[in-house]
Length: 204
Image (tube, rainbow, N blue to C red; front, top):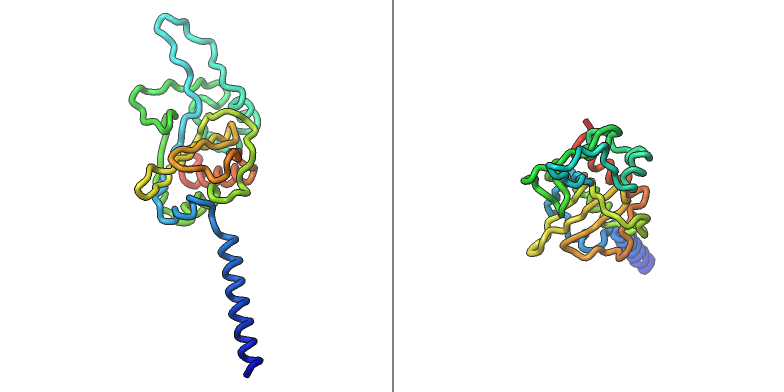
């Protein structure tokens, strides 16, 4: 009898240990652990807007892109298909002027948006931003955002995240970034974000 009780206790203890380990392995950093049912909107953004030319100014021979964007394009624009590149980044094309009344997301013109309804994509977005191992010290001190993520919060402003693939880092608003100064994307985070936006917006 004692041996049976001891065996049952051992099995219960083992089960609780495995459950605890599994929970720890899948837990997300705050506040992303509280966002499993939160609405998420993803934005395509124009990462660079050329300075406006006055009517009296001569037409420019060409617009110089920031060096970070130039390097990004040279490196293959981080595997984004041409249909997801901001206007004017394809060699030979100048960035298009922005209409006066175009909607903006934290000072970046919105080229398109999508509300996330697929639970797998929703969970993947939270997993990317909610996992500390996906973030590191940024390599660049710049912000030319190609994408934006807005995640709803109860009785608070949305948690907004600007993602700059050309600068390989993020900028946040409306919440405390849980990783301090580690706002730089790891290679894995970049690949996962690209996979998400390809799925959300397509690449045509």
